[in-house]
Amino acid sequence: HLERIADVEPAVHAFLHVNAESAIAAAQAVDDDVAAGRQPASPLAGVPLALKDLVTMRGAPTTVGSKMLANWEPPYDATITRKMLEAGIVIIGKTNLDEFAMGSSTENSAYGPTHNPWDLTRVPGGSGGGSSASLAAFESALAIGTDTGGSIRQPAAVTGTVGVKPTYGGVSRYGLVAFSSSLDQAGPCARTVLDAALLHEVIGGHDPLDATSINEPVPSVVAAAREGALGSLKGVKIGVVRELSGDGYEPGVTASFDEAVDQLRALGAEVVEVSCPHFGYGLSAYYLIAPSECSSNLARFDAMRYGLRVGDDGAHSAEEVMSMTREAGFGDEVKRRIIIGTYALSSGYYDAYYGSAQKVRTLIKRDFAAAFEQVDVLVSPTTPTTAFAIGERTDDPMAMYLADLCTIPASLAGTPAMSVPSRLSGTDGLPVGLQIMAPALQEARMYRVAAAYE
Ligand code: GLN
Image 1 (cartoon, rainbow, N blue to C red):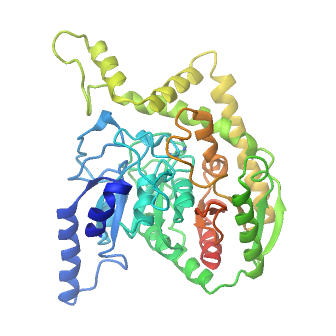
Image 2 (cartoon, helix red, strand yellow; image 1 turned 90 degrees about the vertical axis):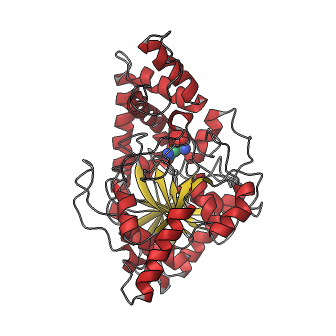
């Protein structure tokens, strides 16, 4: 994998940092165990993994794609990093992302864009484009993403890989740089459903260091994926979400989705149409809630505690140092969100904006609850289009936000959802993703359906 990285990185740029030495040492330790007849720590021992550069790991920088944290080295491991290292997984490097995970194309990274391995002129999605591109380019066998509004699933869809957003609270957020704390969730990325399931069971589970972690056993997703791989969906009821189709969806995406639904039927599932009337308001609610929480979370980057400090020359006041640092350290999209969020939370506007968005969130949760009375899982396309061209949407934030149309409802509801490659590519020959959504803690259902379809 390190050789492959050396070969293709100049074209793909999936990584911000490669830990060649520590990766070789970790792989050697697994080899030594095997040579000495010791049982490896887990089925994934020795498997190379790419870690989104928003998750902390001792001994490597965590930049979050921002100049604000250039060269910052965390003094501790995230809980998921620790669990993966204990499982013998070889973390080969840190992957590129939109700055502070804000974006849908990885173009908002302060360190240059990642290119989609299927067509180097296209984006790999975002914010976790580096993780998904590293899988599609065979630079890593597994990857970790984080999903606030779609940043695992949308990059998976446009790179032809698998990406899973677990139930909110199912995977620890301790050691992840916070964007929007009520939405952020780390999850597995892989090239197959079973690989994602194996990684899911390593990283999942209760963590006393994360106050929102759920104290429940990790869902048995490996068994579910193996059952699905037998190829029958008899007895499974699947709902097609009416509101996640129609205008704004590329014809190639719609055709691919329709074909996927036919396949699910052919595998024995019962398929019905389901209405989720409030999903259409998800995007507007998300783009108030996420910026509001980000404006609060990013207040910690004040030039006093971490990372960049500009103007600390004795000639400037502490306030001037703060504002000069934030001016220089944050990119345009991050500033836009901080301003929107600060406005939405300000007194006099709180009820009209943040309060209303939270009410929409409740209505979307109720839509899911009503739908899951009727069906086991819901399906939709993961994204309305295939990978768009680099530069195509950078001047139009609204067009960029539309990439998250289908992924946001499950984020707002805190329910699990995943993207698996559709069998039929788009009319442009590029990958299309099938999204599968399940009730909270019922990840096993979606892994079973995904593995049967795959
Ligand atoms: N693209 C969405 C945004 O810009 C989602 C990002 C994410 O899931 N981190 O907020």
